[in-house]
Amino acid sequence: MIEEAIGLLPELGARKLELRRAGESMVDSVTHESGGAVKVSMLAGLPDSAEALFEGFKAKLRSQIRKAEKNGLSFELGEGAVGVEHFYKVFARNMKRLGSPVHDRRWFEAIQALYGKQAVIGLVRYDERIVGAGLILIHPHRVSIPWASTLAEYNHLAPNMLLYWELMKVACTHNAKLFDFGRSTMGEGTFRFKKQWGAEPRRLSWDEYNRTGLVNPVTPAKPSLMSRLRPWVESGWQALPDPIANRVGPKLRRYISL
Picture 1 (cartoon, rainbow, N blue to C red):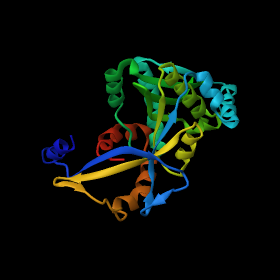
Picture 2: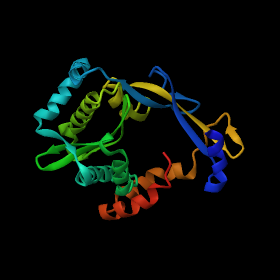
Picture 3: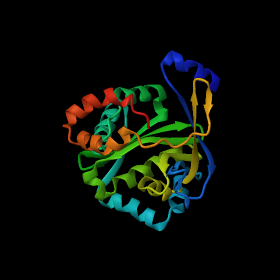
Picture 4: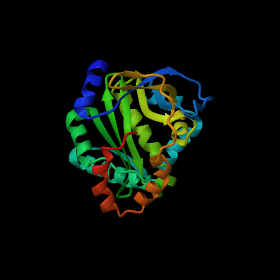
């Protein structure tokens, strides 16, 4: 498969192929090596029931989940096109807050059409407003959460705690054995957030190939002009009006590799 993919590079006009895969578990005391931050996949094992999952959480985490409920937040599943619309409004606003162009809404509509009932949208509501949203993909034995967002002005109510808890409950009802929280940089805020749910880091190995084969070893690149300009670009994007950011963002997003 790798050889076939390399053969497609000239046809696609691409210079390189990057292969990412999760490796062995690792301790979280090591945060940097080779001059760069270590990227890991955060994976949590799931018990046979949601009740057992909740009882396995630390007391602080259980308290935070209950706090979200006491704050008047409620959870519901988003169905069909309306569910995608609710999800996208929160997601697009959060991406702009982070200074990043957003995916086209048609991307999520296509995912929903392809996965059907295996793509589940979770929504957190406060009064009549959707303040948190996430999308999980259900695979045999594994559930992944590629996208989740909350509205920053409501974060003091802990919508993210209710959102992740309810989506993990959905994973348990599908008899999944693993909840994939996605990629994080070891030691950073998202890493700590995912770890409190029982997720453990697995090193992500990124192999790079050019048109002649494996580029080995891959040495950390010097900071590029774009990386130095990134804070300025993000600040400028955050200043855009929402309609402009949501119209232009999808046209740019396809060219951004993360």
